[in-house]
Length: 75
Image 1 (cartoon, rainbow, N blue to C red):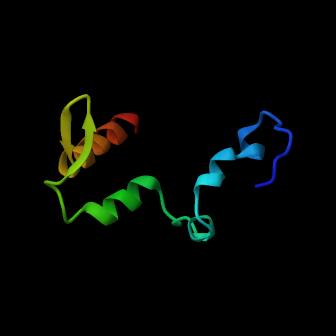
Image 2: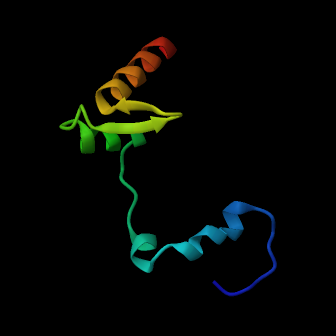
């Protein structure tokens, strides 16, 4: 990325793109929600750690359960 004057708009400047390979930049984003992507790739590993949050270990099983509870409460 050549040096240029920054506009102040991240959507235009995108300086973080300097840290990605050409292969990563060329990848197509999945045509599903983030939740669906995480679920589909981890549903077979319910006891694996999905998140470490302030020392708390959250498994995929618990993560999916909490997401479902939240979604139901928003309905």
